[in-house]
Amino acid sequence: MEKQKLPHAQSSLIYGIVSIVTACCCFGLPGVIFGYIGLNNSKKALAIYNEDPSQYTGDGNANTGKITSIIGLVLGAIAVLQILYAIFSGSWEEQMEMYKGLIEQSS
Image 1 (cartoon, helix red, strand yellow):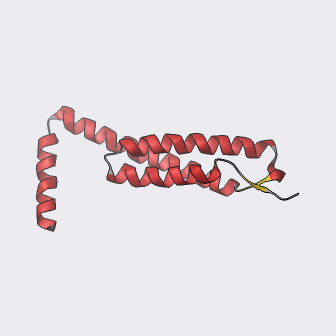
Image 2 (spheres, one colour):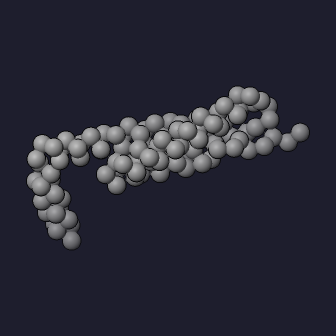
């Protein structure tokens, strides 16, 4: 019998990678969302794999998706907490001025 691809394994890997990228580039919240979705997909995939390991291939993608999703969740949570701290401490305007200056210098 030919082995099948593990359902949800590849999508968990893709969501994990996207969560890392968006956590670093999009102020963290999309990273948290994609990381959560990727983590759920990897849990589904690993549960299916553990029922009958001889029937499926691709458990490496599920494990890697789990790891990248956790990294994306952590990075996204740190970014969100940093933004919340900046807003509530009153330093948000200073940071925005700093970003504008950096953008103007790079142009």
